[in-house]
Image (cartoon, rainbow, N blue to C red):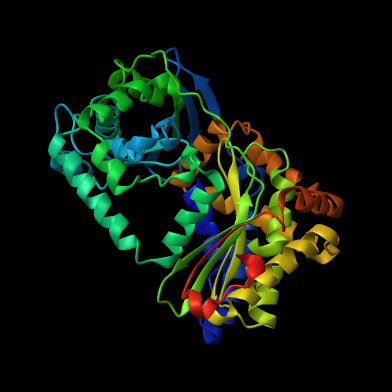
Length: 465
């Protein structure tokens, strides 16, 4: 879900060629409103939730308009559960699920699913791992057979582990040349410290070298169990058909006691911290922010509205209007809250000329102070609500998005009526609440400032160091 949110934000803030931008925006606006007009109660999701005898939480949405079935299995096996010295263990375990089972090689798995035009995959983030399946209705038996095999019987071949390790290390090395990656990594480390949220999900070259095959096998054995998982099935299928498939292909997936590590909420350290990284760049990459909120925080909706006005609303946001349109300091600037299960981050990101770094930081802080001290306008509030409620259906316009969305709704305990209630949550936000959450969750005095730049040209002022 977090990747989808990042993608949604990127799409919202993307700047197109000025010559073509406005005709395109008109077209998008028309299509957007047509789509939203279609989203009536008749399109609301009818989610059937069941907890099976083996502890698996099962969510099913029937959609018989296309002969396609999408499955997502969310397993509470994210990087938050791995030991610090083996960072990357959760990610590499998930990625190895499709690299071979007790009866099939990686190539056979790939050929089997590609032959029918389907797809299987697996990945992990901080909070949970996700295994996905896409298959035509006529190939459901094949799809569920593969799905059960990779979840229950992965063989974790040593040679595939070594290949993954080499590939991830190569990727990490190449990303060192990307200033936005470096800035983001240092920001998370500074905000969360030694907490797992402060580490890269992929791990580091050193921790990847420390991961042995036994570690992967033990991690899988400990957490990939049905009473630690959520399965959502969306498409041309009935609940009876789903349960018959589970009975046929998952009979040996039994519940098991989960020896969960003690999960602690990150300690919030309220202090100003500046991290400068010297690189020969023409543009300074800047992140300013601090700890944010968890996804189940009841203020999430007021914070969403507030952030849209501050920096989440693309060209309509205050940061964009100030830093790009009025000052001409940057092509893009944005802010967002990235919530996780136990905490999250708030950050503003901008790229600007090295020589403009100080001014950009000053303007960011000016806008943060302004939204903390002055009520937003009626127009800003109305526009934010209109966008957030109007764009909401786009989060589940496809079967795959619905399946992933339901996993997140269940994992974060948002309630199956969340989809129905979301518009009312947003529409009930008042100007006073925007002011309240801005004061509560934005801190212009204690923040982490990361500047990846040619430091001599950037010449940060003493108050920012």
